[in-house]
Length: 279
Image: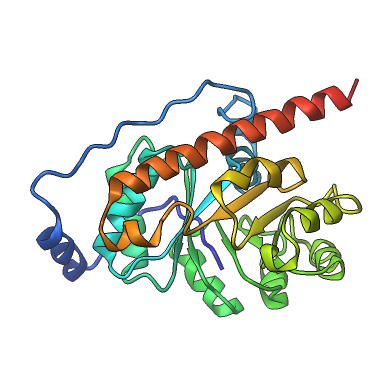
């Protein structure tokens, strides 16, 4: 399950000292990715009046891409996350198996006081209602799971936190939606048929926002969004395994920049097409 966190979390002194030992004397400063401001991607006055849950949904819809990060150490997670955020990624998922995951989130908030505002950092994987309560208490705004956890759906009814359950079949999509889910994650999408499967699901369920997850490449982002996905999850496509093992953060930055750009363009294209359909 993935968790979005905007609130700083208490870091342990051992974590802070551990990061300091490994941090280079001069941290690389990545150039900030800029894109043309559009109504679909930039905050508007009306957006600030939305509820926290609706704001989170808006971030997901307007991003097009959710970057999913797993690292073997807190220090590696920090460097890779910094590269991806600087490359333009606006929704970042950090897997819970990453050491010091909550402290990493806090550090990201501290080091990106302006850039992380409006960006969504998440933590996964949570598989029961108690875990969900724990991550919410730590400052979560939303989280995802690979399957539908009914206890979590029941627990979060009428609350300000967004839960994105994992679904495979039309029955699961409808069941999750009827149980209160505002958006679902189609997983594992590549194994289920990829683009053709998302397109087929979108026909009867165009009113239900879907995140496509698993095995998606950067060059297929546009097609997934065109076929009906609200956003796509990219893991190794951005946090390339070889780049991570070699600590090649420049490569991660470039992949993130490309993914963010393609996601933004795909979302804008979807918006234009939707407007044309209204007339």
